[in-house]
Image (cartoon, rainbow, N blue to C red; front, side, top):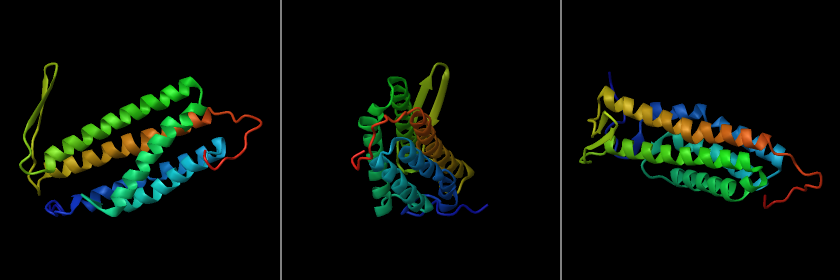
Length: 191
């Protein structure tokens, strides 16, 4: 079996794997629609629409560093800030807490996923052992052109898709569906 792009110094995740994230990018469109139709929050809705396009651009070919990656990360962080520190306060406390819990899980999963992938694909990274109870996992560098390296790319992509594309968007729709617009609400560009 031929493993492509394992040694490419510019590409972080091989394209035939990273393109799987295309399947979860429409979740951002769904959230954008719900945020606008239920809450009329134009800023958050626009950011969600924008991150749909940057996600498609970034995950088409995931480079270590690129303009589209920088823009994608910037918009994703903007969504996190706007949704968490502004728009979530329009929700009842149960739904705000649901959003905060979901985002905490997503941030932790993202951090761990990035760390694990870094250890596994970066030459000269030090081996790490993680012990929980009686179980020990060893994280170590994996040589390119192996099935284990290919599986590491797939796992990292699927973890990212679930915890940063699916979970936040499903949580967003769940919380936004609970929102009841006040009768005197008016569309405000700042929302």
